Length: 249
Length: 251
Figure (cartoon, chains in turn orange, cyan):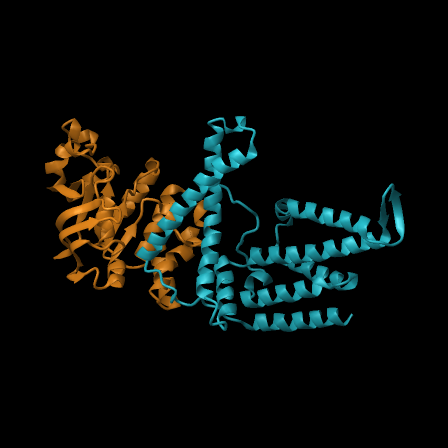
């Protein structure tokens, strides 16, 4: 079943720039998709249409058969979004408060909120940091906290916008392990990146964007060698003609 | 990044930690108001009470005083000003200035009052989680329909959350400018503008990103209400506090 259905989507910004140009795309439930492309190719603009942060100028976006525009709250519950700058995404003064922010907005009762927060913190391994101030966390921990905040909303689709940017090696591994465990738990995963190296070994689909259009879409192994044509650095292993291995090995 | 200040919540099980935030807020207001017009015996009673609370809650006075160094300087200035400007029996006379007995007493009294109020605030912040303070603000503002209590509480929370982030940003920007020899420019206005403009721009950009992230997490003002519950301990504390305040006022 396709959980995301995008038909002929175009988006023009207020200054007249064309952000997306006639994009049609279907993503099945449980897929692990990497969307790559150079800066300004429209990756973030595309993702922001999935939960109605941006609305189409032309075309439609449907989540599990229902138009995003038709029910924004439903869209935001179904699609969790991790932004590139985790610091700007964290709103709580403590780890607990931040994770509780989403469920409080959904007006759940206190017991449910507490249950969801506990489950989310267990899932990302931050239970020992409950009362800690987020600004004292490391980069990797902040991203895990941002993931916990999303998990507490119980979404079906989770999008990650440049999840490995400015992280050290242990931080990258922490976040990658988290993404994989979310995928194994049945979430549909969309990772936006221009750095394929760290994640491509785990993806089952690769989409390349350029100038607001999808220029390649298919199995990673089939198109990874062609990505440099579109301004995306190919993984070192594929440049050397070897199989791309996981960063976790 | 290190903790920015010792004026922050530390978990504990002391009496202050266990009290409901609304009661603590009420006690804070009561004692502060009475202290403002209190004389030496009254302040003495409050100081005894405060000492017991400080010992019981293990308030880190040493690190607290470090953070209060500018406040201590302010107290010294107040004391000095009072000593030389209050008319009365001169103890020491130096040219145009005379330090009076009444001036010393008046200065000490004012400094004592301010110290009690500041230490009470310190104890309150030390023993109260920030979301409890937000909850209390919401609760206090609830009867006033024309004041958006929930919005104010959210703004308070976001301010507390982002002050360290903005300070960090200011440090980074200042360091980047020092690395490019901004110190060779002796004009402080030039340096302030060079630091201020990028900092303000980055802060607004961050605020924009924050607004989008909040929207993505379904932000609404009709959120789940914070949970506050008064226990027997709170009511007992209220009775004791009323008795103490009654005693102090009647002196």
